[in-house]
Image (cartoon, rainbow, N blue to C red):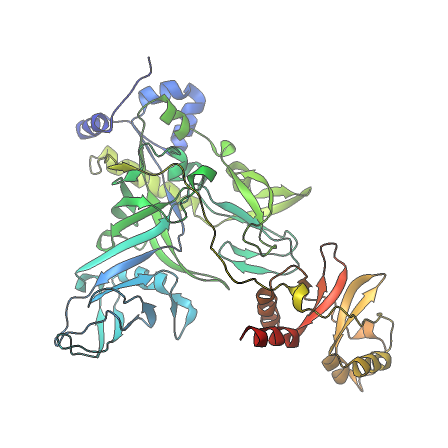
Length: 501
């Protein structure tokens, strides 16, 4: 007969000091050595932990009323020069983790403000309002700390993915993404999540994690308040909406950060206890990193549905390298395994000492649902729609004089250099002008060999950003076979944007 336990029974054992608590990694070892049936008999709770960038995070802050009072609602508020959302009541704001400083840009954002609050540092508030009869004040500038606030509630719409993805880059350009810096030509693989320590991998059926589940968050305690945004359980990508009191938290587990070239975020530490109610729960809680697989996506393809190159296990990712097309590629975690283990250990200690009891969910999280993409009504133009298809090219051995004649005759600024049917470089009118008098004779001597290119099926907006990043005014266009099929310039893009208006 299958053994069944209840959360209430486990809580009674915790109060008596008789409960057996293991971390998720310890549970994996036990299930492997004794099997899930025996593990279910021996273990009462498995503790989990994750610590990583969770962009969909932020905090509700209540300042109390000034004298004379001010209505920030509908006005503006800046915390250390970072904009906060004021579409609430008179003195409530929401500071989002990804908000960016007006003066410091990506160097400092909402996540940093939240960390500074938890550290006990003073934060500058600048507020502007339109003024009413009952809230006549129009401006305020003051300093406050976390202790000065009535409430400071971390309220995160989407945290704690069950499993996320691994990312690599097939393109010729370095990409700066929410998955970190991705080197060109499959130069590296970055991945998120703590594997078997991830809370939702231990209870993928959401039998014990639901609305009202008590959790470790940011060094204090908090609760699951619902399924997170983009909750997609059918693809193993469930998420949680969580809350906690910032005044209980520690800067060790709440850290603002900047993803280079991408934006600001907040690293959040979350741990969830998993009560082992029966053998099935023990089996799920005992799955190893070798049994947990995620998609390895190619971020070099700028589309919503990026190509899945293969499935990879967390065991392979944690090994430091994965294989792509027969080549070993180095891996890097975006989540801290060290911190995840520390969270699981702290939660284990709290439960063993009777300081943390389990809570029964008042409602289970959904296990089904349709994950929708954004509805769009405007067709996004591709490079093929605006590029110049009539190509004027030259060879590396051609003279500077010949190249100058081509540029003048055809009124162009960019001359792709082709050898044996392949793009090998590019020369611009500026290159030619600055080479006069330097004794250079052939294009091979002056051409740019590391060419920034565009793909014909890329959105124009992405290519425009690439041209801006590299400070250039045009790029040769390649098709899927790598063949030169056109050239796109800032003039082409400007004409398109003019038609958009």
